[in-house]
Length: 206
Image: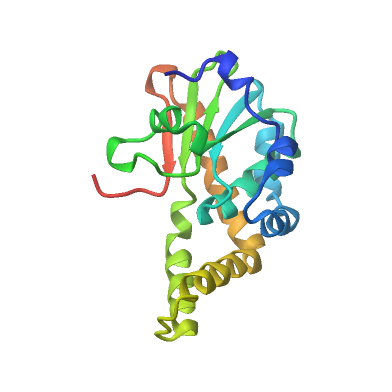
């Protein structure tokens, strides 16, 4: 299975994706509205001599997708140099996994940046690597707030607190995500086509 131009064009627009979100729609919109694209990142994409495409494989139930997807959709909204098509990862698992190492099969979200010939420029996996300490700190804060509560509702409460934390930190986390993503794309474009794609985002041990 390959991401052809025909397949790419079958994805959803940003608006179509947002309209069909079933889980975390309000938090998604809160984060989307809070994002401020760093001027240097916006200028980089606006200045591209060749337009790029971005295939987004995401899932509305995923915490990392909740932080990362709205940030990258906001970036694309502000430039005509980056066209976006969004896919429901759960319906495109096989295709999504072609962009992941075997030990990371099933990871979500995945963002694939392509040139006008559908050649891969960059892959951004899950979220910004720089955010990992902040995400770990979020987990510690949530655990302290629940303070060993093992009631049946703890799982729901934990997810709710994590979601609220992501919304509260949307602007600062979005800036980190967008700066790292912009640098990844710049690095990918600097490589010869045979040396692409540049791969970034979170990393797991092999």
